[in-house]
Length: 84
Image (cartoon, rainbow, N blue to C red; front, top):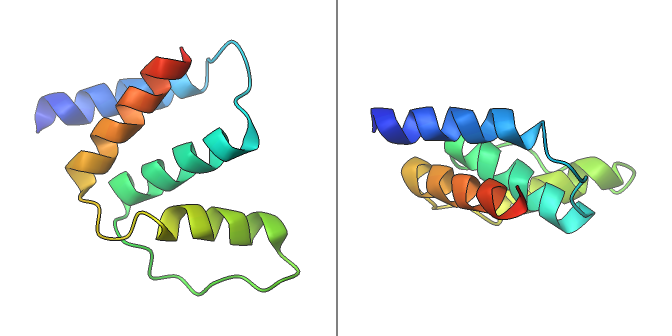
């Protein structure tokens, strides 16, 4: 677990140093995996129609409901490595 957490934290740092900005769909996946790995299942209220960005982020995170923290961390690490 400690190794996975360290690898996850390294991937978070690497995500800020990507040579190219990922497309919006990939950014939403990164966001959703990060939230799932660090917070767990989404229990927040869905944003209203006026908040398009908030709604997209909520949907990305909510789509991962039921994914374990370790699994989300590993998927996040794999995704960042594939972009680097």
